[in-house]
Amino acid sequence: MSWTLFIDESGQDQRHSPYEVLAGIAVEDRKVWPLIRDLSDAQQHIFGMRLFEAYGREAKAQKLLDRKTFKHAAQLGPFEHVQRTQLARELLIDGTAVTRDRLTALGQAKIEYCRFSLDLARRHGAKVFATIVPQEAPRPERSDALRKDYAFLFERFYYFLNGSPGDPMGYLVFDELDRSAAHILLGQVSNYFVNTRNGRSRSRLIIPEPFFVHSDLTTLIQTADIVAYVISWGLRLRRMTAPAREELRPLADLVHRLQFTRDTEGGDRIYGLKLIDDLRPRPLA
Image 1 (tube, rainbow, N blue to C red):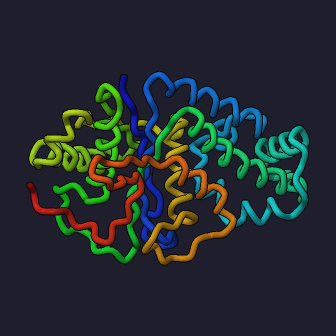
Image 2: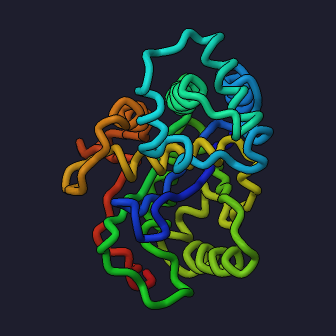
Image 3: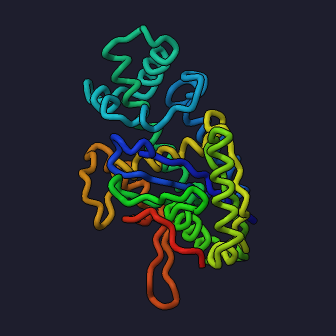
């Protein structure tokens, strides 16, 4: 048995998002394909088509869950499912065919899909991990060392694997980067798992070489993107002082229910979500 951690990020532009979030959603190997199929069916059911067919690229959470989506969704009362699907599909097929009904239906469909996708992940036993960084946090000057948000994400994933029956292996799957950025990240990850004590210990259960996939064609990377966006804009842990968008609270509650938690023998509790105030890496151990 193994688990795959699908990883994406939100707020890396350091401009508009209140927090920079690196999020991962872990799915057991035998449940990956059933979950992907269910998510694909959900898109067909809710939008009348796959989102990739509609947009020709990944439907980012920034577009699915921005303030405009909620504004449009609230213009009219809730549509009955069949009518909502038909109206949303008409606008997705022809973006110039704008009517109030279609805009409202598409907004409602986007919100429902994000809600349903998180609920599907929960029903398939998925677990959420994330590191959350305030935009004003100090950042590293070196490019060869792994940032603390990555190190802590790997740490929490390792705790999950180590506490699971049979010590399953874990795989890391990242959203595709350009070639130079991918090489930099690969070097940092290798340096962490080979040259640090913690990294060497965690490589017992985490395969040190990550996979990079094209997010447009990878359904669970999109789910990780939804998780990251909801955490940045709508979920608040202790010491997270930036205002949250109230309309995202139902989705934030779903993400919070998905997070990994474990009680240690010493009575402490380990959480899958962690706030990091300083991104500079620790000295090599």
